[in-house]
Amino acid sequence: MPLIPADSRRRIGSPNRSIQRGFTLIELLVVIAIISILAALLSPAISQAREKGRQAACLSNLKQIGYALVMYAQENDDYLPGARNPGTAWCWATLLEPYQGGIQKLPCLTWKSKGYWHTWSGTYSYNLYFGFWNAGTWVYNLRRLSQFRRPAEEAVVVDGTGLTAADINDYFGSDYGIPGGGNTCPALHANGFNALFVDGHAEWKSKAWIDNRPGGDIFWSPSP
Ligand SMILES: [Zn+2]
Image (cartoon, rainbow, N blue to C red):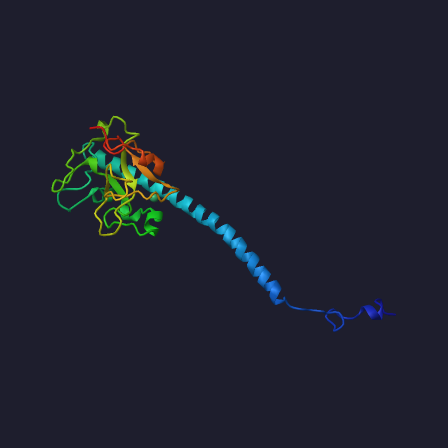
């Protein structure tokens, strides 16, 4: 006698058990629309997270430049590099190359993605008050690290460079952040920028903060 009744031995998939149908066009369109809405909702969050990562990497770059500056000073009687020599044989970035392998290898990815780049200094600018370049203007004395009276407030290197590869603005002065100034601060990091200070710390500053610095402010023109 069979253990299973005859009428329950039909195989799954037999003609009278399988009723299959595909998605209708409307259902497919609804699914696609839902996926598109979800992607649109997530997109700003993803790009915001990516920018936060770039901002943090930029801050880390500046700290590495800070280490290179200290090593340079240790081998040069406590002097920091000048911004640019009278000719064009070197600028601050070329002087630091032996200590960190080239600032071009430490780009700020946000600036680079916007097309800001300089062949010498990558995406960063140096305080032009650290000396000299006598053909046009500036000419300031080179500074010793131990000379600075307020090293935590005096900036050495900031986020930002000339607007094109041919632009020579690897330096910043009191026109930094001023529209039409020689060097610009378009505030690409969360409406602000990163800066390295003489004491070696690097910090994010807001565009509003930089806009309120007077021309003679210590941020631009450090203590002698
Ligand atoms: Zn940056």
